[in-house]
Length: 187
Image (tube, rainbow, N blue to C red):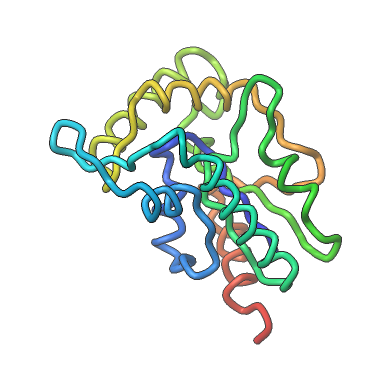
């Protein structure tokens, strides 16, 4: 399986991976950024040091790791927002590289924060943004809230390709089945 985590920063993607002990299967652009650029401080709170000049290198490394894992037939989790805007869809970019023998899933970590009856309403998105703001303050590495707002906006207008199966992170049975599929791969 190839699992693409989905959601703005602070929506619980990395926490989900850690809680389920999936780090050894995971690729993260933020982890690469930390290794290349280190951490800085924003009002005493650690932040990933985002350096425009190294972003090309971050994505070259990320893509090389992803390509190698796919070529080796390894179960893989992509811990990025996997959201894009302005005509760019990172999931489509990844799907171009995925061999036919892979099952591709999206775990949506933002959906549980939205109103089930009207998920993309202004009220629902504003409420979810308040939750993200609090989580962002409490997480190990915070990000600028303007960035989170941008990714919430991307989510509201984002289309997930039809070839992937979407699972809400709140759908515990489906999530557990998927985790079991990864952890029991080749056993």
